[in-house]
Amino acid sequence: MKLLRVSSDKRHLVTEDGKPFYFLGDTAWELFHALDRDEALSYLRTRKEQGFNMIQAVVLAELDGLRTPNAYGRTPLLQDESGAFDPEKPDLTGEYSYFDHVEYIVSEAEKLGLYIGMLPTWGDKWNKLWGVGPEIFTPENAYSYGKWLAGRFSHHSNLLWILGGDRPLTEERHFRIIDAMAEGLKAGDGGKFLMTLHPTGSRSSAEVLAGRAWIDFHMNQSGHGFPTKPCYELLAEALAADPDKPAMDGEPCYEDHAVNFKEENGYFDAVDVRLAAWRNLLSGACGNTYGHSSVWCMRRDPTPYWPNTWETALRRPGAELLRVYRDFIRAHDLSSFRPIGNAVKGNAHDANYVAAAVSGDSAWLYIPCGAPVEIELSALPFTPEKMRLFEPTLGTLSEPMPFPEDRRIVFPARGAGRGMDYLLELT
Image 1 (spheres, rainbow, N blue to C red):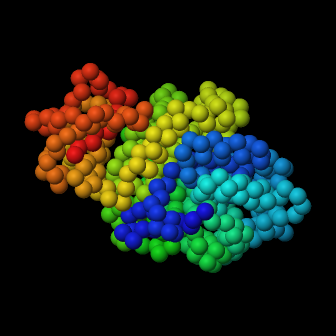
Image 2: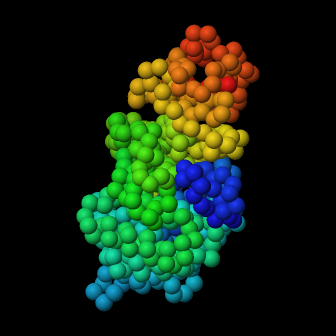
Image 3: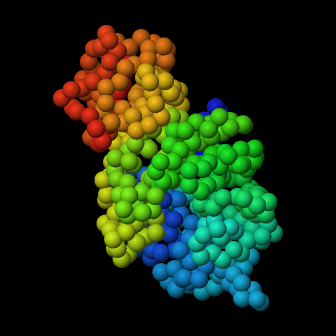
């Protein structure tokens, strides 16, 4: 596989031979910790077939990843003289050690052409603001662990590093730990793999780490709350940070996830997944990550809060529709897309917000609720003559239609409302 790099315009990702790469991720945080080898291979094959190219997974996992063993009864770290888990003492003894299992999964992903966005640790291991922890990292052992981990997996070509792990950097020691781990990773792999940081909900790595040289591209987490800052606003802020770097949403709302983590608020669904994905794409993202509430944790026992097992959840509608998203990306040169926020008149930042991008003498607009819109001609570098309608649930594109003289776009037979989203191409 080709190594990943940042494009010369500092807005996109490319492979080392210069070919465009749009990060199509899945959050499988507990992949290394929870699944055995047959299960992991089944998971990877399914995601490959659905069109994903990146799997985000954590080495020292969130769900008691230091004390609860993996599928083969192994834990990742040995304990020191005081009984504390020591990041400088990975358990490497015997057959099927924890890191041998990680090696197997990374290797199988590489064979399938899948990249792994590897988190060295979940954030509760350096900031136990919530979760089970325990906090085990200092700047000194964070550097040593990072260097060892990167050296251990540097023979692969399908990795990038994701630091952080859903916890905020609120104290000086947090910054020192993260910086030291990043320095260790670079020392271990010689700077071979790209690096970013996964922030906490409704935040971006650009907010507190924009000037860090080790961050190659920014990652946002638009997350699972509502109402919170929408994905396109987070993305615009990250892309405006100095210096210029690509940015993406590494954790939008998960399919079948309770809104604000409360069942009584209802659940995000495939429509919400589409809204985030297409808005991110047309707002200038270098990638987008899908997630499912039962897949990230590899849920085995359904409950009212988690109604799916991880296996049944793999085929939920939001994940299956990523094929359409993938095919659209493959069919277009995203490096030529320029986001515009005022493509329609009165483009309020609400449920009807229209994300749009222009490319040469064409433009794409994502109409989220199918409601009538009036095109703002002054926002376009050309005068539209034709238009086509693209169905994001089917991947179909209509025959060209004349652009209306009054600039008002509406398809009466199609209706409007939630789930009636479509893309409009103007040429």
